[in-house]
Image (cartoon, rainbow, N blue to C red; front, side, top):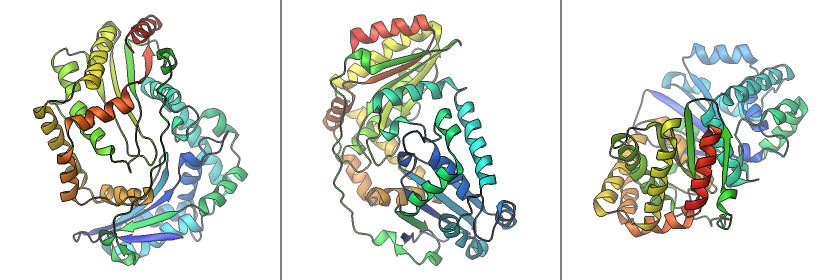
Length: 405
């Protein structure tokens, strides 16, 4: 059943509608990692009354956009057009999810595209390092795997496998949201707060340092370092304290990472924090890349920063600035209607209605430095490390890691 919602947003000259299907790559079966990515791509190529060429031409002739994306815990399909064309294009979304053609010819094209994407992904040492990190952190959890799958699994997926997966897809919960009243849905702003009991988290805090580390050799002059752990879901009260920590570490030129690695020492190519919204225990990690010559020094700095986060609460001026930057990031996210709709429908599927801007800011203001220190020690006291670099450097960092963590 498709649950419909309407966002009573200020009038715009375009309309957009998005469908969130609960369950993404986390629904991939064993030995079929990447099947939902293939299915999602196949859905948007043909549907009842529209073959591949007719569908593309119909959408483009109205100046519209049809987009799709697979996440670890959901699939997002969206269509956007000028208001005057929306009534002609909006029905396509339901046709795509209910009456796709799923032809074998198009399946072969999509499968080849997935294989090409996986091969291209493997050319990026950052991606390889992140895949290593995910696997040691999440083990056999669905979040341990890339949404596009792996080459071995995808190469063996058949057309019949995808048809069987579509039967599963039809039974998943689906949520539709639009800024156009033609969806005839419930006003999302009138929803009462939803309270859903969280799943208990299993955090690996008993592993030795060597079991919380992995590395891979690369033959460039670049060393990539990723450190972090799994944390809480978006439903948790601990989500916002971790967002404040993310803001303190990585938002803008006043961020702790920027000041330490670039302003004071000028040693990184790329650095930041990865903390996405997830329905389950989301990853929280610091990533950075440096030249091989500076890699050991960078790891020393990172180790000192990490220990300081675990031992010392943020000072008042630091936490105030981090909160203000976080509020600003939420306001920035509210400038795009597409982002607003995706975020709201995603949170509803997680079982959580979004707080109003006033309440959200109030919740952020209530967070203390001790709240942040508490969640930091809960989730990040036994971090996991992934390195991509010269073998000699990786081994030296491994020795430093065993000594300090």
